[in-house]
Length: 401
Image (cartoon, rainbow, N blue to C red; front, top):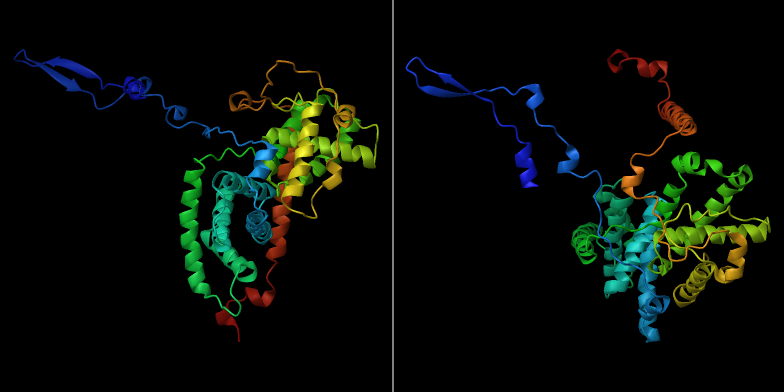
């Protein structure tokens, strides 16, 4: 880098002039000609995208269940601490109005940390850890909130749902300072222990990107109208599947793209059983959209692992239970994919490939319509929040009687 910067420097222009006594004097020009000015390329100094570390965060189902240990009493204590942290994520998602993909990111970070380092000994310390993970997820997925917002919400949670001795009253001011200090401590600890690896492969974020307006109008222009009419309902069911199953340690089983594809297959099977037994995804639907290899046997094995994790960890209302009893034959009836024997999947979403993407007229019209709708909504909301002042309010106070 140093060599290239030195080469890019423009040397000042020098002119040799001769004095009356014959001596030569070297004059340095204070100005640089426009054509000689160095060309500034920001990408040489700061990349347009920062690449996160790439680590393997997927494990065998038996290894994940084995992390609970063989002692039933200790396993129950661990699950109790997990439930408290997951309840914390769920509560703060509602109170702070966080995005769904921030909630799923919190769960992903939580299970990664638990698998590698286990949880702290006490429930209050687990809540402090969960707060640091939530803040990290929020900074990664959306606009960060002021620190006081996290602290207030965490204190409210600890007062209402945290463990406390019978009759003991918490000093709120003291608790706020403790929560603030623990946030700083655990946030540093979490980032260092996870190796600053924020490449989460968040399936909730991926599903929104894979089927965003850009790809709907550019990549999916050749899909039949009948499938386009059905697909939004399937997409919504897949979103629900991702959010609900994120409460279990399913994120440790597979990468984000595989999780999205599996969620779509589950939604397709559900649609087949409930509404249209003849429903089927278009030819090579998954091969054209996902940079992973999918086989009916592999996806069926994932569903079986999902069910095993539900039985081993938490009995929740959102559990899929017997709905996960999906065989490879069921999946073969749903998808129509060409075999990929020995062929590496092609990643359509590499940054260098998509940064100069195509734009067609339909996408431009769609974007323009959405911008106009947003502007209209903002103007109408402002008019509701700020109604026209009445005549007495418009009179200056000093003129009133």
